[in-house]
Length: 294
Image 1: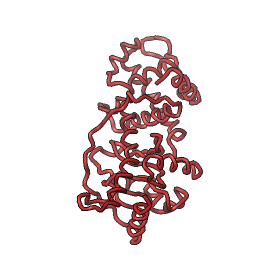
Image 2 (image 1 turned 90 degrees about the vertical axis):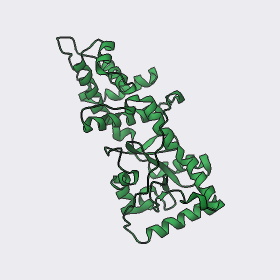
Image 3 (image 1 turned 180 degrees about the horizontal axis):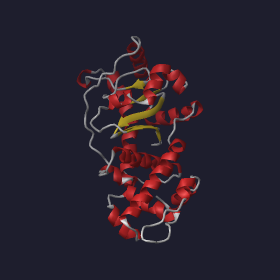
Image 4 (image 1 turned 30 degrees about the horizontal axis):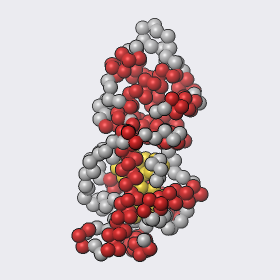
């Protein structure tokens, strides 16, 4: 994070009254100022250092480090709706155009994938929806089926949520084909040229979510290995990292050097119960139409 970005972050944090309460250090030391407490938390999220090591660096006790981090995580949870949100219907025009520039794949509102959290991002690597809290062993499609955005899209359709039936999100073959979710054609060895061309275009477009996760985990390295005492604290850490990820990109604070690469583990298809007997036919027709126009 650049010094300029840090300064802007401090201004955001100062809008949260609870974060501006100076927490005293144990042992009679004076309260820690907001600049120092924020640096302590950022050091924790950006590294795999122990709290003891961070305490030595900032000349404070382990318990003080823990308390400052806790305060920071709560503040970022308050800021989360401001920095991670779905684009408006009007903004989706720009989002779709940005995606289409990648590989001519039309109508894409977001790319979805799972990496211990389910993330939906734009072509600019901005998270617009996250679903945090499921075990890493849970299938991506099941995580999706238990999310709020799934319920909204199943109940109201892409017309209501995305502003057009021609808009959708895209995912890999682990996800089910839906009218609002375009995925690759399966049986790759037996596909005709148009289907292979469709799959290539979708893959080139969808890779942005993998790069987004790589940037997230590369900049906020605490996510690479979390040894924390509770699931609730782990969720708060992931939420904070996602908020900071978006916040940095909104400030054009983007460094390729942060990119972290995970090995993708293929998943078997997880079948989501059909709610509408016609939805599969609609989704297939939509996908075939995109295929024919590429």
